[in-house]
Length: 275
Length: 212
Image 1 (cartoon, each protein chain N blue to C red):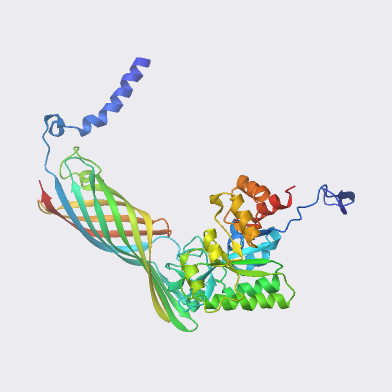
Image 2: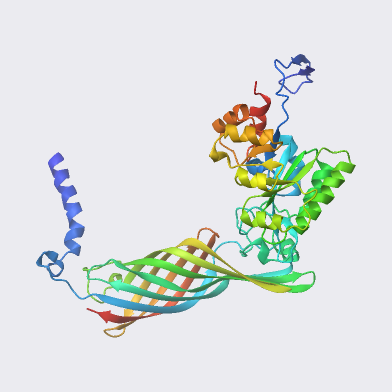
């Protein structure tokens, strides 16, 4: 219960008001995961997606976790960027095109600005921000790169450990969206302390012993498969669910452990108000 | 009154047709006039028409909005005024230079259009061969622009982007001989995906390479 005062004019608020919960919020643990660090919500905030600024704001619009996109620069620095190509949906016009991997980290820092003027952050900057400056509990590193996964694994382990030392309940997992990422994961010499999230079929998730399975939401609620995976100790998310009627359906009936969406506030609403 | 207005309207509707059609173009007889394929080669100067985005981290910057524009076009001239063809070429959009951490850096952006083009002279059967409006034509095109960019900053990065785009142009053509003409053309190029807009003026040589 919240008690306070309010008024409608410029005078000092003097009229008493009491806000009371008529029903409790849904207590079931659930991850509300913001796509690209903030998804479409970032469009309304004047902050670019996949930036340090949006990561710091994610919890304010209901996210408990974030999905961020990892690519390598030409000189193999892991940075955050969603699209295959540098384009004016995401960067300010500078005449240049191509992919992240065509440019060195130095060139990206000095010659490119994201839509709202930010620099393209490194994965390390992002994880440091999440651990030290947010209360987020889940980070989904979408492996959009080709090549070795070693650097990403090292950062994952470093910042999972940093979070643990700070008493944070934070899980940083590597998402495997395709066969390139699966091959890169398989090529890792040591897979200990490397939690992964398999976005492909359940058989592969089992084969890789992935603690997380995240099918595309368009495949449907998959009630039986979700229950089977959860019975095996896996947590199940869907991506990238933005349609409101389906959000309501998946939040209330699909028995998921989380939803990745461009509209984290809507996911939060449907989850916390579910009876 | 109503009847008068009706007749007046009918007269207005028919008058352009009367001006444009002549017995020579009566197609009911199954005859056609000569078809031609005309090859156009042109070159000139261009001026980039929208803002260029010089990165804020660059110092001592200078932008160059002027460039060159080259065109090669093959156009089918049938025995009516609607001409169709294809066009390509090269247009330099803009460049800028500056320093980054004290070292020289530059960006150049150019485009290769690959367009379907349509052209119509402003007049067809009115006036004589010397008529100004017969020699004026408007051209529109649609297709793709291959946008090429080059960054020189410690190392060189060449990249390409394909964008849908448009062309609009107007030209004046001066006959020199039966198969050779000179033209001057003002052009506007627009690449939509990369938000490029460029104006150019070209001198062109038109050569009637095929007739049948």
